[in-house]
Length: 439
Image (cartoon, rainbow, N blue to C red):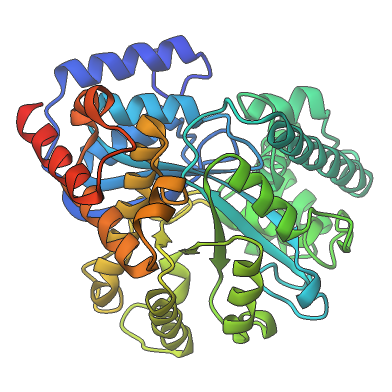
């Protein structure tokens, strides 16, 4: 088998990265970005490693590429290295689910689960984090694995004689064993295909277990339609593997924000589509989030409009983007790539997204700037240097957006040699421009 950049062996991925950086000619960057792509450390439907995502982002001409994985920072160092090697503006995040006490009676963005919200940190620059933060990170990984193993036990009992061995069938699907629900779905689909090699038998098995007509099953053995159906019927609300979360199932949002801040990254609110009770009260939700440290906002654009058909979701999208601009919350966007069929990059030329292109680019540039300046000299978005130089969040955003627009990683050595905390913002911008001329 030929070597590829999704190999679980990091040496092979590094070799391919170096060869591509030395030998490929990449297109000029275009005003497009994907700052929220999951990698194979928490399920990417194409199996992309951090290196592969960086390479594909560069090949597609993305100005900014960013990875976000569930409950882990396993891809951080690899993506940082790859983005620097390829001169790709980038940022690195982590996503999890949290409990929001103030919204305990309202569904936010985790369907059917009052008080539970997907939540993020973005702009991580190192895995060398404080001990307190490391304990929190370790607990997230442990809680996720414990939850998934218990779910697999319940689903196994229902799907018997199709039974997964977690160690043999699930853990090997992720390079460091950080399996997600989507890994479980894929594992069931793959094992069913092996256990029932005749298509008619496979259809009859899934038809009986999932309560659908065998002939209606689509994309067998392991495509999106069937894996989504497995997930919906066995792991989501109403399914045999589902357990309704409560206030103790996930960390409180305030605790996750504290963890993110300890890592000198940016606590980030996430948005689904504005149709839930919780997201309908978005101003209140944002204020609750900001009260414990949230300073940025994440949207998955493709969920928020139907191409060529203006609807309520698009109206909600426009309103929430305006809210982020009014409050000075940098806006992060991307496609996730953790479900088959999701785009590599959003269609920013579409009538629905083009009016908001600059908002997403500005947010991506701010995160690239934060990451660069924090890593180089501790001058990130929430640093003492930033607090001392910007009393107004909009002026701060202007600075970080301008730096992020001007600077790309090829000039990093100049920053490392000359950047210091005594510089004024205008001097840092001038240095960024000089770095791009001399590098």
